[in-house]
Image (cartoon, rainbow, N blue to C red; front, side):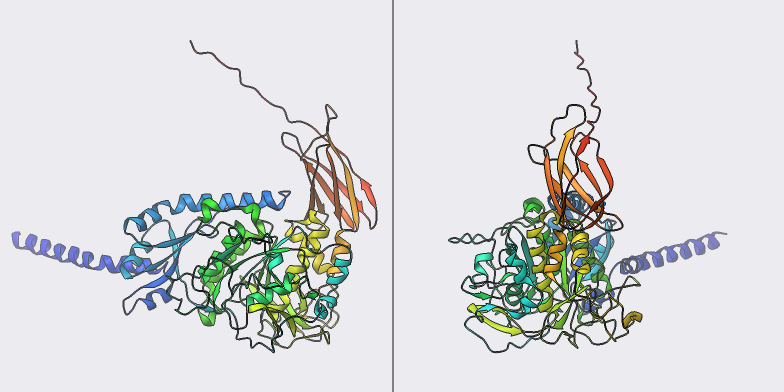
Length: 602
């Protein structure tokens, strides 16, 4: 009996020992469920790998479509995102800080960027707040674009690509983009170029101020960076490190004008801010996300994005003339993460314009971020001299999340475009990278004419698409027929910024908002027009006398008035017709207020 018990005890001890030996392996395998295989591969020979540690909870910013202004939308999104990041990352940040491990925290996506070895990776994967750990590969976001001949200045006069989309006709109406801010994340910008310096938001005509206006997402301690970059790292002022001056060229198309007759930009009265997201054409998912975060709530040089961000300084549109292809390391896992950043900007009322890509003419080649996101406004490239779609311009449909989507959304000039390059020169480049900035600039013109549309991305896109010059195609991408508009070659057609501006300012609503009980005017009441069977927008705010004015496109609207402490009122089926001024008054009922009696304690 005793021998049997001894044998059983020995067997049990061996079993427990086996389990103890297996547990680390089992834990490691459990961790691998949340760790991208490429991360394990990078650590096979020891060393470290740069990763993105994505937390399980992503912020719910709710539905911001009906918040009346861009400022209120931006603030709501910013607060929701950074509150979630602060709460969820607190313990993880403390864990890393206690071990003196450097990291970069993001709030626009609830994630941290950190370099890990095998031991740290397993520790992070075992933490309950961590959802997945992704690689942060270096991605070639730009093709090699050879510069054509350089010129010391642009040809005097208005560039013909701008005339083709009627930008000059909008200037003649008095709208040049004044009061509107556009942004770009690219290879950087030659900020004091004669065509760009006057429009840079950080220049007052005498002294530069780069706080809130410039951010460099290329850091010296990143493992992907290499010595010898002409801009260095963490550049304190805008700088373009690309051989073809890619970023400087795109910004010139948006608003370039030297004031001496060289008119190369769509919206010369607008202002610009920028972010360098690529080192000589190579970026990472983290650098792209970092720039999106800067644009959501710009912050000063060396500032803390969570503490110092100011969504009131956010741009109205961001141009993205880059891609993140999977064959260079950006696969579905990083794609989904970057989509969260694009979605955040859109919900904050910021238009995200993206080059459709230069992978045509095959169908289904709008296939990389950010162009193929439903939340992005993807732009194809046509030759304005012949009105033909360029063979390399990517065609749709775009498939994201298994759902095919119409892409591109619109087409703009992108062949032989003259614009600014480094050191005060000008040159010609071609590609969808050149087409997209035309649309970002067009948005600035549109909003300078109809500022009530500011922050209403759906409404702005609706105007640009439905006023485009329709173009048909014989290509059958996505089942397109020869008379179909929109289609997957041209989208809705060729950008026509004059038609869009005229549509946005076709009719006028005006009136007064008063208190039902007293008849007194209500200042700072918010008016929002929602196109029936269409998007919300534009919006307006009453002045001190309770009066408002709103310009908007022809159509039938539901118009809502809201004010603090009042019940909202909606007037439905308001018909707005071209060249008419219609009076629409609102009387709001004050909400009941309850008072708690003061109780004295004895």
